[in-house]
Every structure is written in structure tokens, then in C-alpha cells.
Image (tube, rainbow, N blue to C red; front, side, top):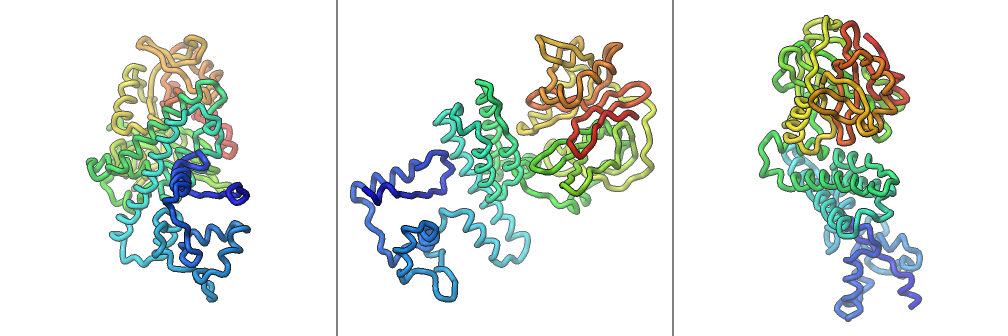
Length: 422
């Protein structure tokens, strides 16, 4: 009994329960005498390395002939029947293997990503089965651990999305988690079936999961030449890095694009294209269905101030644009819109309103952007306003007045106070 009280277990499954069902099943088989005792001389290397971290077990294995050799090298792990159950160790082994070119890297990377997606789907099944109201789902550490597993599988984009979720203390907060889990499940399922998707959708899925596209490849793609108007800016703190999204729109084509800028603790965000300016240039878009992210290529003229603001659409038309973007990429987190609307309260919540309906402001937008500035700019009625649609509501970015543009986009501690006028 004393030995069994000190029982320790480890499993590579993503279950939040300890011990998990796999350990319990193995114990049940062992109690029925189905699992034979392990010969200390034939302990797999992976098990030996783990047991070495447990003081009361490592002393019993120290004298075994299978222990690491005197030159400090460990036993060949490829002979271990559970070597395939250690994704992190297998990934490390793969990194040291020689590669002859990118064509050998991609299938290997895809296989590793698919293993991580399988784990995520099992985690989701376990979470739904146990219930989303459990206390651990309000603990950020739960999602940090899940995110770390996705990072090990080289799913950085999906890992960042998992890490960012923070549930409130409201009784129905698990509804928010359920909505996000649906998106995780959709992305994971699409990633596992990527070979069945068309090229644009497959590229969009790959980028959302974390596949990096080289800037040189993007700049080598066909250019889209237009007079680009800087419609709005949004700064956010994501995973200890400041991210600036600068939304631009083609004066002729009317197409949206976003320019991303990143800043760590010792850097600043790019201010090359202030809100309310325009410049003629070539944009090169990243692959994907939405294809909103872009890089600036050749610039054909100086940055200037537009003579007149672009007219905004109705909220009904804006909802159609949002719906089309969500249909193209259901996991999209932000969609830019340029509307003409007034600011008011509907059922106690601040909203943008016009004759066709209303759209609520996001809770953070009420604090960060300042409803007071919106009310001051829209004191005479409807105004032209650039905003981001999110699942939590509308985030105002800039008010386009006849004589100036007022930048009211969200800011971070390093990006400044915003509220700039041009």
C-alpha cells in the first residue's frame, strides 16, 4: 500500500484530469494481472529518463545495464515502444536530422502540425464531456498549458489564439469559451483535411494555424497598384508584443488591406503612414481567401492628406460586408468597416445607429476609445466612421470629418495616447 500511495503517472494526452483515463485503464489491466512486470534491465529509455527525476525510483534503476553509458550518451530511443508518445522529444530529434531542402521540410512540418491538431481535438472532446463550467477553465494556466502543446507542434498562430482567451467571472462566461472552442475545432478539423481544400482556403488555414510566409515570397507576388487611404489604426498588446494594425483602403478598387507593425520592449511601432493620409503605391497581399494582410512594395509618390473623406456605408451594408468576410474565413477575428452612423444608447448599451439598425460597441472600446470623443465628433448627427468588427462588438478607430480625421483607435502603454487629428 505504501508503494501505491506514491504512484506517479504521466501521459501525453491533453486531458485536464489527473490521472487520465489511459492511466486508469492501464491500472485496471494491471490489477487483473494482464500487464506483466517490467524487467529492470529492459526499461525503455524514455521511461528511464522520466524515472530519473523521481528520487525513490531512480535509485532502483541506477545499477541497471540499460542506464546511460559512461560517455554520457543515452540509449537509442528509437527502440523504445513509447518513443512515439513523446511529441516534444520526437520534435527535438527531428530538428537534428539532416535536410536536403525545403521540399523535405514541409511534409515533416505538416505531420507535426497534424499531431498537434489531433491532441487539440481530444482536449476539446474532453472539455465538452466534462463541462465548460469547471473551475479550471477560468484559470489562465489551463490555456497556457494547452498553448504550449500547440507551440511544440509548431502551431504558433493557433497557440496565440488559445493563449489570449481570458474568461470573466460572469455566470455565463462559459458561453464565450464555447464560442471560441467552436473556432478552434473548425481550424483543427480544416487543418487535418487541408489536402481536400482549394488552394486559397488551404493557404488561409495554414496561415491561421501558424505557417509563416516569407516576406520575399509575398513581395514576389503580383502587385496591386492604387491610391491607398489610411482609414484607421488599432494597437494591441499580444503575448508581450505590441501589434499595430493599420487599415488602408484603395481609392479606386475600394479593397481593404492591413499593414502590421510589431514592437518589443525596446522598439517602437511604425508611424510611416498616419491615419488620414494617402499615398500611391504597390501592395502585395499574403495568400489566403480574405487576403487582407499586405506588404508595401514600390511607392509611386509622397504621402499626402486626402482632399475629402471617403463616404461611409449604412450599417446594413456593413453587416453584408462582415458576413462575406466571415463566410470566406469563419475564424476571422476582425473585419474593417467604414460606415456613416450616429452614436447612441440602445437598451443601455452604447451603439452605432442609423435608419437601417444598430451595432453595439465592444466593452473595451467604451473604455479605450472614449465614447466622449465619439459624441463630440457626432454632436450634429451621423459621421463617417472607420471601425473594426469583432465578436464582442464594434471598435471605433477613426472619425472622418470634412476638415480633419480624428484618430481614436485603441492604444497600448508604448504606442501613445492616440486621439490625433489630421
